[in-house]
Length: 194
Image 1 (cartoon, helix red, strand yellow):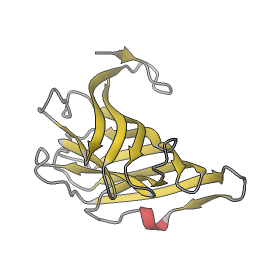
Image 2 (image 1 turned 90 degrees about the vertical axis):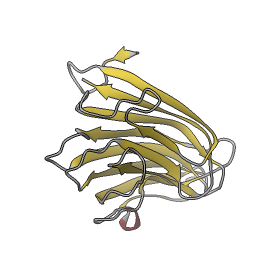
Image 3 (image 1 turned 30 degrees about the vertical axis):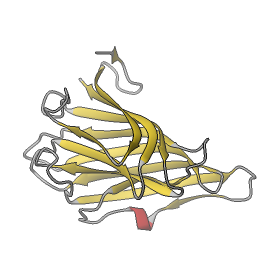
Image 4 (image 1 turned 135 degrees about the vertical axis):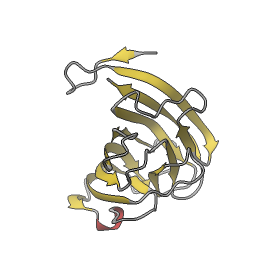
């Protein structure tokens, strides 16, 4: 295992738990107790780092959802908030705003982490997703994410998402996918933070 100290978390250490690489994959799942995945009370904080996730289909959102039954189903109630900034390559448009269509209110839908990701050879999305105390049976499970992505309309996007799984059951699996089409390529690494 690789142990490093993440920025902004003094005294903390990150331990690499599992790395998965997509190759025309419909989904990538991390299920506690399967294929050396740990997603339980071993760590209070888990972080997924997604690197150059490239969709097979143009103009897609990169999404995730949790499971309370070791991946038999993904559809935990989520309440969330999301905003982004963007700037076009030709400087023809830019902005900063709340994304009403990307937040969730007690929804079992997959949460969008980044949107309008292009499928051109140089387009992808990268970022990180933190999940706090997923094995708690007392509290909702908070998460926060940030990403950088190359959009289908030739722009750079900077996305922010935060929210919680509204359940007191333990979250023991996380699945990632694009809204439509396969994950053509990309790597996701799961770390535990102590």
